[in-house]
Structure formats: structure tokens, C-alpha cells
Amino acid sequence: MISKTMQDALNAQINLEQASAQLYLAMSAHCTGKSFKGFAHWLTVQASEETAHAAKLIAFLLDRGGKLELKTIAPPPTEFGGVIQVFEQTLAHEKTITGRISALFEQARNEKDYASEIALQWYVTEQVEEEAHVGEIVDHLRAVGDQGGGIWYLDSRMGKRGTV
Image 1 (cartoon, one colour):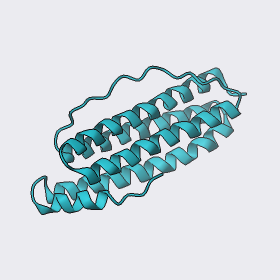
Image 2 (cartoon, one colour):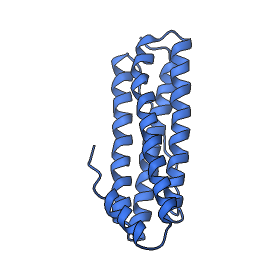
Image 3 (cartoon, rainbow, N blue to C red):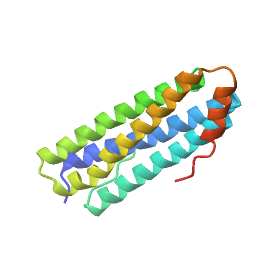
């Protein structure tokens, strides 16, 4: 059986993963509105990935006898600036998620909840990959700027991202 404190923390993370999905969908719509369909596609795939992360946590929580408590998610913004700003915000958001996952992992360790610690290890590794990948996109965008052919090349490349 999972502790009440770990159940509450996992529920908070589940809700944050769902909020992340909404954020990335809003960013995708923003990019589509600026005719950057490749970046929009990348963000839509990212939104699906966040939903999958939430589903994985839900399954774990329920397998441990916990209770799922979904909360109302605040609507994300609708404006994000240029594509560079979109991905800078994405990177900042992923760093926030990394901090939350690290705190969850620490809580599991402090509670000697080995099952949660092991399950959360996947998320720790995933966040390293997320930050590295989004950081690379930000670096590329900064290198080419938001004008000229380079950004359109990157847009085309982002459109090739596979689905979850």
C-alpha cells in the first residue's frame, strides 16, 4: 500500500503531466498559427508523450492501491512569442518538471518506498533526455535565428518526429 503523502505527491505529478500536455498543445496551436507546422507537429507529439507519462503514473498509483485525484487544470497561455521563445519556454518547463521528479524521487527515498523509487527512476532518466533534446533544439534555433531559410529547414526537420 502506498503512503498518503506519496499518493498525494504522485497525484500532483499526474496533474502536472496533464497540464504539460495542455501547454504543449497550446504551443503547437501557436506555431500552427505562424505557419510553422513542423514545430507544431513536434509539440503535438510532445503533448501525447506527456499524456503517456501521466497514464504510466496513474497505472503505478492504482497498482499500489492508491486513489487517483484529478484536479482542474488552469488553461495555458495562447501567446508564446516567436519559435525561439516557444522552445526556450519549453526548456524552462522541462527543467521545472525535472525538479519536481527529483523531489518525488527524494520523497520516495526518504519514505523508504522502494517501489516508487524504482518506478520514478524511469522519469529521472526521461527528464535527462527531455532537457538534452529540447536544449539542442534551442541551440539550433538560436544559431539560425528566427528569420531566413534556416528556421524553415528546422521546421521541416521537426515535422519528421515520430509519434509516441
